Amino acid sequence: MAGPVPTLGNPQSTIEILNKYRFVFQKKYGQNFLIDSHVLDKIIKAAKITEEDYIVEIGPGIGTMTQYLAAAAKGVAAIEIDRALIPILQDTLSGYENVDLINEDVLKVDLEKLVEEKNGGHPVKVVANLPYYITTPIIMGLFEKRVPLKSVTVMVQKEVAQRMQAGPGTKDYGALSLAVQYYASPYVAANVPPNCFLPRPGVGSAVIRLETYEEPPVRVTDERLMFAVIRASFNQRRKTLQNGLSHVPELGISKEMTIKALQEMGISESIRGEAMTLQEFAEFTNRVERMRNLS
Ligand code: SAM
Image (cartoon, rainbow, N blue to C red; front, side, top):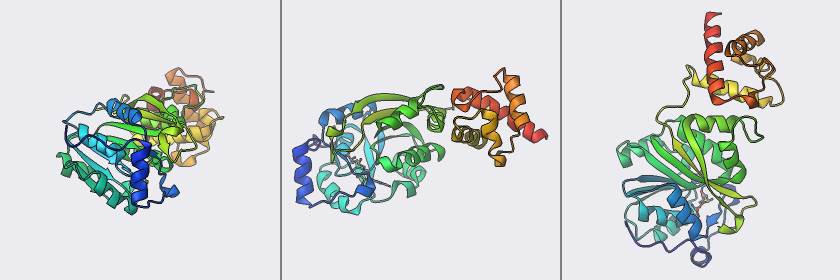
């Protein structure tokens, strides 16, 4: 074990530290600190952390999960936006020599460079109790910028976890499901009620593990076009794919092209995006892209 046994992860020690530093919660930063050691153990287990792993933690708060991560992993880079938390983190993490504290907005950090510096460019594990107001930009940023990742294990709003793992034909299925499932295989490891946090959030939470693929599960010649097609088809959820896409002229996909591609694929012309699999979106995109190039 790299460092002392964690002392945080219960209401008493959390309140003690908050009072010692007269910490004032910043609502705008989505601050809900974990106060349940069972939940922390579940997150560590879901992330399958070993002493070989380097961890990037987003939003360490007062360092509760950081203590658990530092005790289990080779090293941790903890990125916290709130300057008022830095002296607290220096205190709660003083016994751990394998933690680097970074006082930054995670959305502005060059994570690829960080992984290069801290882990020689080898894939890292991201583990976090995320600030819910920026869950999607954080996760999509990690994937789209091709940060070398083994997995992403994060606490998110329960509904968001459901959307990430939803399949075609369900009410939760949408652009987020397809984007996440293009990069990773999702698995909900635990549901977590509001009373495990201080202060209590107004929503239920879940721990989701996203195991990143080495290669995407589908082949697509123009990724950006596929995601633009996906977004356009879910923006017009109640519309058929052909109507949805014809509402976004920038795509350059005419109704005729959509109908022809669907016919070639043996799919009904009146299909809606919400019924299409990732495989079908990829194949559809490849076909219309070829047609666009020929026209
Ligand atoms: N990890 C701690 C825990 O589990 O008790 C705190 C989790 S709390 C839900 C989210 C944390 O993310 C807060 O400490 C908040 O200040 C921090 N945060 C919010 N926005 C951030 C950003 N853009 N970059 C880095 N950290 C951020």
